[in-house]
Length: 307
Image 1 (cartoon, rainbow, N blue to C red):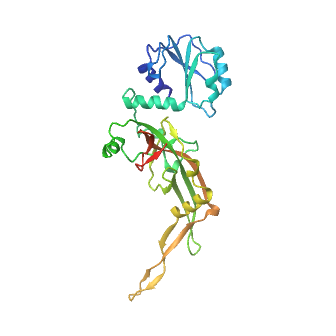
Image 2 (cartoon, rainbow, N blue to C red):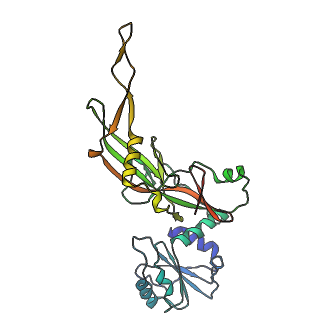
Image 3 (cartoon, helix red, strand yellow):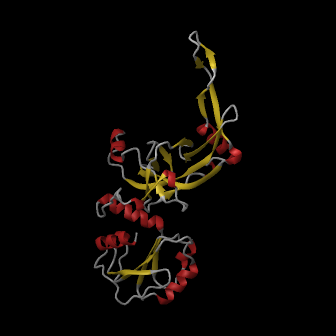
């Protein structure tokens, strides 16, 4: 992310250069200094630019106050990959502006769409940058599904050419279930299933193929309404339906040739008592379509949802 921001600053900032006399402070790295950054509406006679790398905890007011003690005179711009607590913006002990992850994502997204930055996909030969569904990482929210629609074709087919749009990500859950299928006569067969819970379409579905998933880019991420997620009871019901199998039985009627022909489909169901069920956050690609009111285009089912 820091590299992308530096590339963007070289394009958008006026007279951007390294800040030879700025020292990094705890949690903030000096990126350089510019005369101004018109693209962000920053018109100043000198802007010291800082980067706050991604982290688990948000930036607090006390961190900003400590930063301000050592900050150089003049205007300071902080580009933060960490969330920013709202009271940080109320600090008035020095001249600064802080942009959080969503604002940075929108800025980078606009630059990609305008062609100022080129977005590339990591090569498949670099397996460290990819994970497969069967190897879901423990760290939350790192993978994104592949889109099933192409945005320009979608807008053209619906006569919506010319409407602005920007990329974003939609939160979903990827469930892994491992356990035993129990047959009608006490048989037991181990298995493992990967299941997508899509709260936007409120559906749940098996992902049968081993689909390679790319690590998610840093973009604006939209969470669904809390009641769109399945409750525990409903989740168990839906998982049971998706995992359950109907198999032709071994016994049936005897034909005139003496062969046994199975006529019944027998139910094989998951043994929930001994099943291991867990989930990680996964992201679905999408776009914000800027109509009279902003709507969200789902990147896999092609449907529009309210923001």
